[in-house]
Image (cartoon, rainbow, N blue to C red):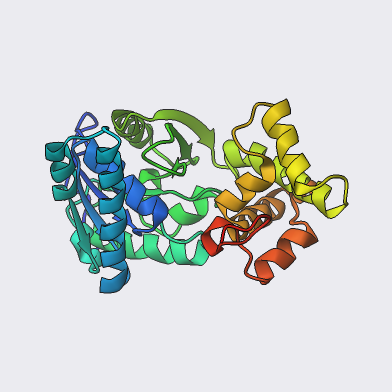
Length: 296
């Protein structure tokens, strides 16, 4: 049942304390962790009980690693885990003030999630997407609250990386933008604001660079090791471009390249044949144990 405007009416200065996260994968569990660390109550939604249990284990392992490194004491570790619950019923998002979608990078899937969320959360709930490339306007159009929809793009690993891209559309209200910025900053993140263009800021700059390295390898200009060493040692990058592509995931890389090419029609955004063949072969990088490098 869709909520009326009179329900859940809150002022612009209200503090966001109740957060939902849709998807408990690597990014979603990381988002849930940083929100819980900041004191928020978090409800993580997953598609079934097995996925919810895997998300719970992922979060617990991350918090345990932080405790082992001395970042958290035992009481803080317990408090963080106590603030997060896991659910397979989307209706459990019904009292959330902010819901962050962190599902698979597929536009149709995300649109369906936003439509379903729009029907179960209060009218004033802000809906955000962690998409790395999909224009937010398309997701906002799947709801009846386009002024309350933003992109909130975290970076992997979420508990470590301090950057968040806040993406607003021509329909996003100033009140929504301000509330989300304040909340992201309360998580200890540095917020940069981008207009709603595919790729936003980071991937608009990063993906052509990574694709250029793949084309260089494909053309036989240099070995993978020398391409990566050139950027690590010559440009002081922590990872070479092919190492970073494996870390991101080659399927994710191809998807972002496809979105950028569809938006701008510029040839340098197009997925190189080598990248396409590797994705088709299931060589997706670190997550499958094999990409440009082997991780067995």
